[in-house]
Length: 248
Length: 248
DNA sequence: CGATATGTTGAACATTCTCAAGGGATGTGG
DNA sequence: CCACATCCCTTGAGAATGTTCAACATATCG
Image (tube, rainbow over all chains, first blue to last red; front, side, top):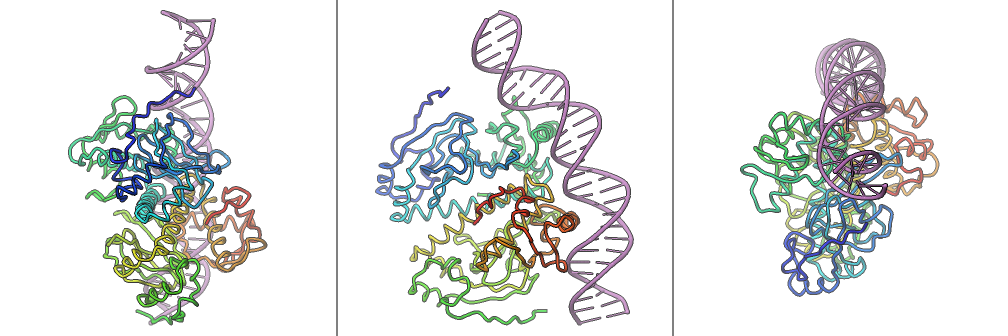
C-alpha cells in the first residue's frame, strides 16, 4: 500500500527550491548549517494524512514539493478547508503541541521537517527565523481574510474563478512567470476538495467549472489541466479589482 | 460633529486594563518605560472610521476599550467583515505601509497607538514584543480559520449562534467569569454589522436572532442586550463540539 | 415635529443543495 | 482479456435555504 516515493531533494539547503521563500529565507549560512543538522525529509502519497486534528504534533516543517490542505470538520461530516499549503508554506504552530486541523496531502508531497522541540529552541536563539515566521503568518492571515470575503460574499461562479485565479497566480510566481499572456496549470485539487475550499457542493463546483469553460473564461484539457487565455478576464469573473489586486 | 470623548486611561502601562493580554504583555518594566515614551491615546466615536483601506498607515496600536471591525468591500458594495477587534487586540501590520482593510469603530473606541516607525524600531530591539506579536497573530489566524468554517459550512441559525457564542466567551474571559451559569452581554454590533460578519443579509440576521429567542436559546432585553441561560445549549446550536471547543 | 438610523416582518424569488442516475478512467482478480 | 469495483466527474429535477424588495415599527436627535 505504501508506495515508496523517490526523494530527490538536495541535501544542502543552498540548493533547496524553496530556500528563499520558506521559513529559513532570512537565515545566514551559519544558521542554515544548524538547521541542516536537525532537518529531515518526509514524503507522503496523494491522499495520505500527514497529521490528524487533535494529535500530538511531533514536528513542524515546510512544504518542499506538492500540495497539502488544512481542513476542519464538524461532527456531522461537513468539512471546510481552511488552508491550502503550497511549496514554501509552513506547517505547524510552535508553542502548541496538538494539531488544530487535519493536514492531508492532496498530491504527492515532500516536506522538510524539524522536530518541534529543537526547532523551538532554535527559534529563540535565531531571530531571523522568528522574524520570517511572523512575516509568513501575517501573509497567511491576509490570505485567510481574502478567503473570508470569498466564502461570505461571493457567488458560486465567483468562488470558482477566485480559486482558479489564486492557484494561477501562485503557480506563476513559483515559476517566475508573469501574469501576462496565457497561463496554464494543473489543478492540484479534486472537485470535492475545491468544494470544501469554497463552501460549495461538488456538484455546484462541477457545474460552475464547466460554465466558465463554456463561456471561454478558461479552457480544460482533461479534467484537471486548466488554460487561462486572459487572466484579467478571470479576475473580473472573480469579482476582484480589475487592476490585479496584489495578494501575497 | 466630532464629539470630544473623555479619555480616562491610566498614563502608566502598569495600570492599563489590557496590560497582560496586549502586544506589550511580555515586556519587562524597562521595556514598558520605553513604550510609554512613544505611546499616545486616540479616541473614536461609534461609527467613525479609524483607517481607510489603501490609506497610509501612520500608526499601529492596541484596542484599549470598545470594539472595532476590519472590513473588506467589493466594488459593487458587498461587504465582508474579516476581523472583530476587542480590547487587547492589535491593529496594523508592521512592515506594511498601507492599510489592507477598513478599520471602523463599531462602538466608542479608545486605542493605544504607536507611530509605525518607532514601533518597528523597537520591535527589532525588543524580542518580547515580536514574540508576543507572533503569538497573537497565530491566535488571530486560528480565529480566522474558525470563521472560515462558519462562513463556508454553517446554516444561518448556526452562524448567529456561533457569533453570540464567541462574543459571550470573549466577554466572559475579559470579565474573568467562567462560562458556567447564565451569561449576559451587550451586542457591540448592529444587525447589519452582524450580517457583514456572517455573510448574511440583515433581514436573515433579524429573523434568526428572533428565532433563537423564540426557542429559548437566548433572551433579549431591548435589541442589543443578550442573556444566555445555558451556554452549552448555545454551543450546540452553533454546531460546535458539545465539550466547549477551546478557542483562544 | 420631521428626519434618520435601526430593526422587524411578509411574500415572491433565486441560487444553491439534495438526491438520483449515469459516464469514463483506472485497477484488480478471475 | 473480461467482469467488476472504485474513484472522479457530470447532469438533471425538485426542494430548500437565504435573498430581495417592500412596508412598517420604534427610538433618538436636532
